[in-house]
Length: 258
Image (cartoon, rainbow, N blue to C red; front, top):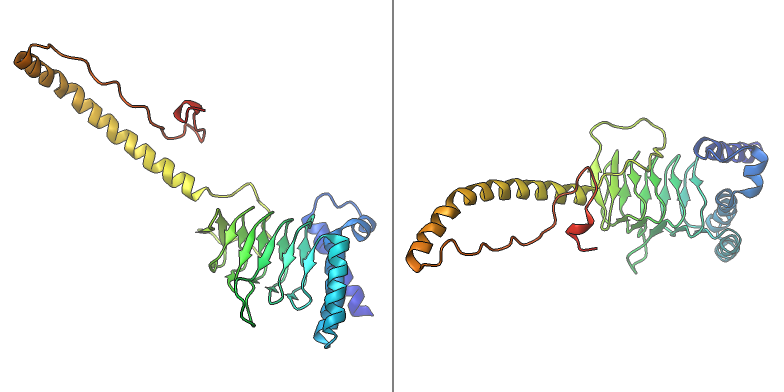
């Protein structure tokens, strides 16, 4: 009994630490579906591991109906687990979750194989998975990593990394984070956008140098051509419009004819 009470206290503590909206223990106890789904999982997992697989599966389906969170009873979940909001979360049968892991709504920890055996992800300690993210296959997400909202992760992630985009782009942190879940969802690198912007800046600089050279040479060439065919300087072509790199992170509408 004491072990059960200790586990309940640990679950409630995890909610208090990671959700500033939590005001009291009673509120958490009564109104957090992620907590209810976790407690339901513990019951169904006990049934599953004690060879009551059908009752365990049926009980997990009941909890899915009540909470909107589907956790297969065969999954392995460590202490300090927290599902915030929770609706639409799916955790597959062979998923392994370490300590102090946080999931937000719409997260899928799914499989990609029809073969029996390990086919779902492993999340190490202190991993945070943002809303709508999909982690697919028997891959390992290294400890203290953060998966951005709506990212699709299909390859292993080293510890202390951030993953964004579809498919997920992995950015290794230059400085390891401390041993607490990282909830800074606003600090997500735009790897592809920054790369494109950088290339566009370099192209703009090269075009400016090329245009400066043309401005020196073009009048001479036009004068020579005019003498040869009597047409004078002729009409210069109007330069074609093309997108420019963003200004302080803002793409201007005229570049895209919005």
